[in-house]
Length: 507
Image 1 (tube, rainbow, N blue to C red):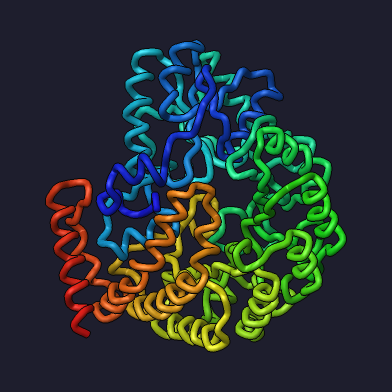
Image 2: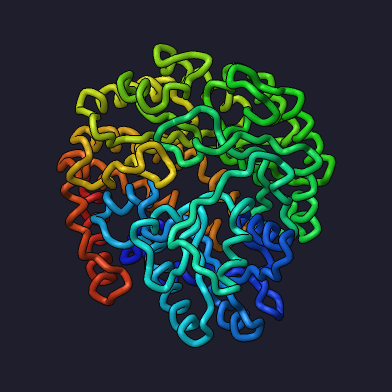
């Protein structure tokens, strides 16, 4: 929700429902925090720094009471141009996303505090690449990459008044000993089990990382930190669940994965979730997928929905940008590999969110037609899966970082046919799995809102994507001036909803 253009989501809903403040203690320390911040906290603590993780709402309290010398900000999408944000912004008429809006508001607060207390500001995190060529004036350093090796030295120099380059690219840790476990609880029970990915896809910012599987005792130390704070769910951070414990792409370490899941359940974990999985290793080891599900006790209401790369149906695009995606198979097996892997996952209550990358410079209508054929082939088998065609983003650490950012006028014309086909099927699956989706939130109010939206709103939203298809995306521009944070915008939207409801009743 936070990646939608901010004018389309009333401020009240963002502040009170979708992005409520994180609780803090009396000193302003965050009770829970995103895993990357907890990792930086551990890195700095190991180097002897007194690091405090706080929230935007309590920043002033911490700065004024602790004699702060350096403020670090973790960003995921400060300019609103990561794939999902870019897509939603384009199809709803463009404009600044909520993530960009929040970043600008935080910047205003930080700048005022900086002028008063004269501290230095470092910005890092997964979205820091968006600021490498467009950094705000109030930022002293943009830090790219992992923190373990170089970040403590950057902080030391800033504290001592030494000159630090405007942009610093941190080296990747090569050994486990360089990566300390978290020392305070992470949001959602997040713990990292692998780092990096050896598949080498050009569009991915993870590609340069050295691949590491963390030992079981290391992972359980982090799980214990979360469980002591009352967090009984675990979310496993990985770029491919089935690469855990392996050294080669053509194998799955079944025993290591089973041991991990067994140990998590023995520790008292209620729900095991994971972020990503690839289709190829699923086909390599169906028994591992089944074992994961049985140990975790997944079912239709307590399922998992990891991100899985579908990417493209074009042989040309596949072999240039993601050749190892199907390894140990190749492009000629891609369609059937996806269908077989999806069936294996569905049998174990894994409902994949397939993401596609569309809009490479040399991509033609024929290439998108191949992707449409791939999606139609998948849909013909009626899997439980979502398919999201996303504009390919030139992320700063990827091999395509010099490509232009996506824009409505540069997307292939057949993208809108692919978008309609995918979203029509996505809405069907969403309606079917309403209770599963609502279960992901522990907040009863959020569950009620999500259930209502699925039941009422999603039944009528298909018309919007059909119009995008018919106009090749141009109908999105009709909404570029709509702002639900103004009186006019609210009145206009109510009028449109009544018009929609009336026209629907006549059909």
